[in-house]
Length: 577
DNA sequence: GCCGATCCCT
Image: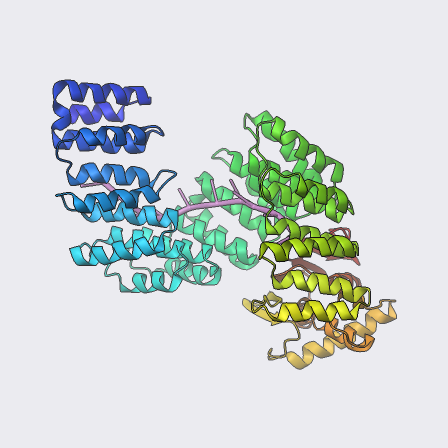
């Protein structure tokens, strides 16, 4: 038996696996359960074409045992068609042998990957019935599956009920929270673990990846620094994947120099993800020159640009207004064997649209080989609004409504366009249509001050320092007026008088956050960082530029798509966004 | 023996 295992582990190619298979058949060992099951398991998981081979061999087994089934189920669980694992489990349940904890573990994995929630619930019930549930590893796999279905409350409940938890259990929940839109909870859990309150488990490489991802999403600068400090102290920065996530985190929290510092000092080598992350980092920072410089270096390092590399370079062109360079990349990528997907189209449509080439953007959407995504029409709508092209905006809106995927934001865009033209009848019509829909994403901004995160909604009056904040806003309004500012009331949706419109604008969440930041900085310098969940509004952009000059403040706003660095009355986006 | 992992359009 030992020699078969040793042969298996020394297979350099799939043809070696076939030779071992032939040997087992010739010697009759194939019908001997332990040999065969080991062989099948190796065959189905170690090589890409091995699963088909194992599946083809399966019918020749006289009486398949649990591990034979497990081998196939495991193989499918990690294949491109994980749902097949469930189908095999159904067949297995009709066979004489019984599933074991391993079978269920592979099934949970398969369910997690194919997002088959119902099937997972059924297997969960079986697990309880069979009495496998005491198994920590199995519980962790299930926890991970729940997290991937976004059943985070169930995942937390399972976690709390576990009698024993190891590092992967913690990691599964932290990563689940981070990826499931609860990054703050992920950080809380990470910090608990770091402070030694995690069943004697300390964070490892995988744990910090969850924490890094949480910081990236939040754009949380202080937390980002703290997580990095932990990584250095515990020598986790020799791991390539950790480094890639660190670069992403620094780039997404507005610390592009730190991101580039890590990129340049990596001792563990760089892979294509490293380059993609750094290029995208420069892109969202509005530094198209550095992004394209790195893009050109990729091939020289023996790496082949992939779809994400091109996407990052296209994003860089988009955010820096480099239309010709972007079009050139878009043309070249397919010649270089990289297929264009929806995201590439989305970026090029935005690039052309923002540059005012609405017809060209429209033609690109129509010329696509696949059915255009709602995002493409939303992008075209946004560009039409930017360039006040009512006809194109109406066309894009029509397509969105037809596709059944129009959102609140789409209606707001169209309505704002009508409003800017004074077409109040159309505004009312669009608003009525919008109000029939329930889903609204409220705009909010947040700013961190002395370790506390302060969050503001539009027109928010719930902050303890509400009075001071609104007084500050009034002061800002007066000072920038003296400086020659006029409110760009076209950004207001409603049919209000000019003065009321200005008020509606002046209480946008990003302005509240900036006013609060000015009050709280105690005259001290330093950069003020504001995060916003949606895109920054045009009036806020203009106002914050002036604030940066009149109050000598450097203000960085991270919005949904990029960073804006306001300084001395200007912005790093050079008004192109 | 089975658990946890990086970059991606508006």
